[in-house]
Length: 277
Image (cartoon, rainbow, N blue to C red; front, side):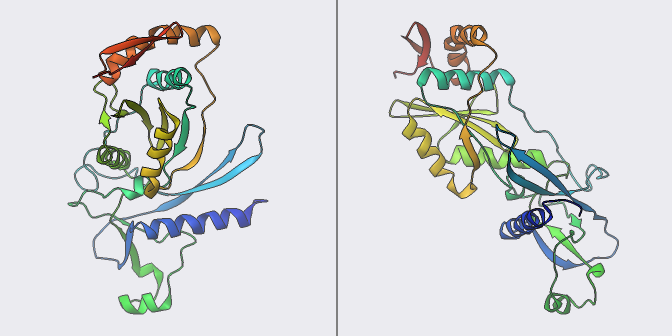
């Protein structure tokens, strides 16, 4: 590896492998006869802050699943994607409620989701992963070339991984009382004691706001097991001031349409939907 940050990249790779093993993504096994073993590769991404300074070196282990066969190595691949209009609506709601929208990602969301039980998927030992001599002896082999990793969870790069990750996040949100919008399946909302929390899901990113800050904080605590990272205030707003005001004028109607709320109250000259029932 030729990089001024080589040591930091290697450290990030080690952390990624540790996280994958902790999630029970795979099991080290002796390579069965007649099975296809997929290659893997590392994907590197440098995340920077608003000043252009390096904020985080992020790596992901990706399976080269571009040659998977339908019905053999994968089944359904469909995964919903949030509408950009929904993102703008959530930001406008955050402005109206004066509760800054929080944006964060769920690390390893895909690899927390169980894969299809009927499919067996094997990958090669990834670069940087060390297999002990004790493990080789236990498996009755003499070299790493004779062993593979059998997947029990999803992995980035595999066809269908996005769908598995979406199902996983959906299940987690429903478990803590959220309802999925019928208009945009990537938008969820929950109302407790007159307090509303709205969440938008984009792949493994979450955009959340609510009518009260403590409700948003409670939501983040409820998903502590997912280790939400890079949680920061989403200061971006849709376009210029004129565009933002245009969205504010229609957000009341859209709020009722998206979240199934039926009663609206006028606040500061704009309409905000509230369920007073």
